[in-house]
Length: 500
Image 1 (cartoon, helix red, strand yellow):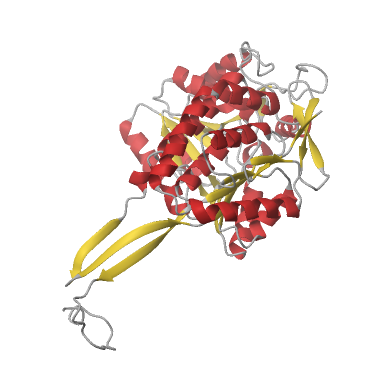
Image 2 (cartoon, one colour):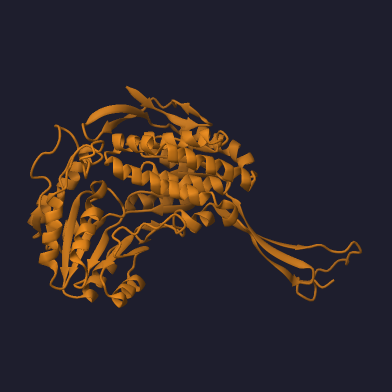
């Protein structure tokens, strides 16, 4: 049985807690490894290694950091298939989807390679006679990231390349459900020439999370996960005096107007609703059919959904793989009978027939129609292959529905009306908006983040926001006086007082 340990100070460490958790192949229910769960001492060891490394790395030149990042980008590019295979083996998503995850992570590394431009300072000269003012940004020191199971490579790559490019050292706490991809991308960072201790990986559970949030030497924490946990991470971290960005859950709506191309909309709804078995915080979970298009749109979505091929992620014939755990599969499945009892029309029931070997975590794609905001299937973040259709008479009703959601991660509109699209993008209360784009995840040089219950903190992740999150500003006012001196002056500085 393979044991997955930690990566601390540039080497693999078993840890001293004696506690482990199983790592399971969701397509077979086979336990393939045991992952070490860090003790407080293990976390402290990682923080100590990061603190020691930060003393030099924060003073490293921009050219040094950039050279490491360029080499890292090339190593990731050559190892795409290997990393994607690790993701598929432990998460279950199909290989093509895993390759896409790695590609979106590499985009952030490419953006991090431009750190010399991103950290250019600004200044004002001769603000008063002989006085100059300039703004600079400096690293925080030791920062940490806590990442979810659904993107075991991409979300870590959204965090640590930018943090390290800004001059910080980093401690990553990935999900214990699928830890191998995170360890591999960390190992490749060392191969790229990153000094030991600048990047560390600590596997663990709530004990590791709590220690990172309370440790006095950790200056900032990035988090991606469910809304309740995001709230707690934000509360605990800020109470401990840390800078925190905590990205929470979502209930993303896709509004389809009567003038939309319904074939394009149906293709998009199926792709965005069932990709990665619905285990995406940017998945479309609610389709809002506006006007009289509901019957036709639902029929088109159902037709496409029936054709989905569900199977192991490492098989080219599979469109959708299993869910991460049996417990999560059962929780997702429980929404189907509840939806039926609450008055929804179950168009497709993904629980109707068993899929795969006994115990495997497969679940078919489900489609619900006539869903209303009072139903559990609408109110909860299901995080699985269940797509709900809500019908409204007007665009205004659809907008009110979307904006009434406690979440505000992403929202999309499908239409051929430019004025309607512009109204949607200006008025919808969501941090990421798609116009005829179902999953509007920004490219790396724009930042990712939601509104309302989908984000706790002031900064989004990656893009320009990450530079501000992982650095702090300093304003320097300087004046070089002539050797003759001016004598004492206790008056408050003013323009007149600073004239030589």
